[in-house]
Image (tube, rainbow, N blue to C red; front, side, top):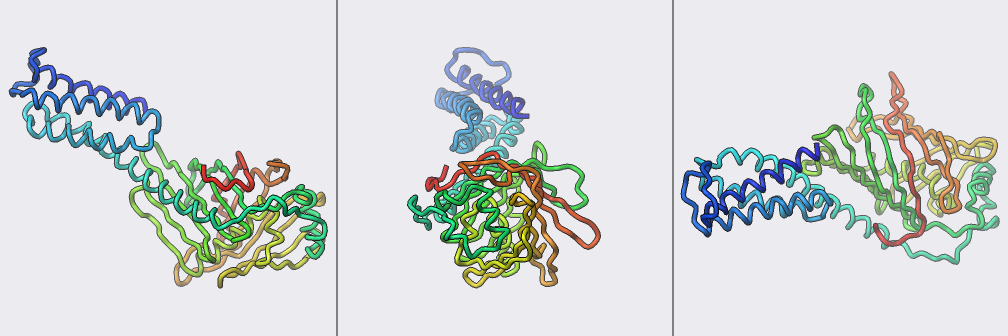
Length: 366
């Protein structure tokens, strides 16, 4: 699809050279019956150059490729209107390039928003490499949590203030959906000032995608989903969403073990392999239960979450299950997980998640 599109762009651009050749009398172009002045010939050449430049920038995923594409289309379409009798069929490739450029513009704006919000989240934290997690720090925690912190390698390591998680995922938007959508995400989480931002890019098919962004800041959650990065499909916030986002933040503690020591979290031991955590921050409160195996590895998280934000919304059990662990920067964490809703009629596994990279205490957004 991408190769076909690039061929269209380059071919469409090169065709514009014919107007330049005729305008300067270099070649008789029988397909162009209307007279073309040298000024118009230069505009035809400018359009050709812009389309070729746009194609090159598109190949390299340049940030402002969309701008060159839009400029090329505008000049080209003005010429087509002026020379409509001879050039009207050029409107079709222009329309295709216009749509792709607008989608690229939407992606640019979405990424600009995400970067701005992410930098605001990260700038809240002040990193100190001198704070090391010790046995004394964990002495009052439940047995299961202490065993997990030792097993993960967190004890003896610096406190985590910021986490960056690179994720590859497969998603289902509805329980009845058969096929999985591929998704990519880079999440940033801060621990000393509880916050996280999760932008995700989901490919539905070759033509449609959606870009989403979940965030938890100042105790409030917000969800934004845009179709092809242009049209808002979902833009929600409110108490139910904030509670659910806090619970998700709580469950993701397993990537950032230092969060177990947060002053905003209280622990209750259930048995030697299970513990319940309650988090309260900025007027939002949520809870979840952590399960560990005999060796102390985290294996499951469960929380009663609102599935949506409608007035009659119900809480359902939301479950994270671990399939595999990997060590990143000396900390053993879950690297393959699934997320499921336990609904009244069926279980809906909507997410398969794999961590490809995890960085701690990097304050620059990349």
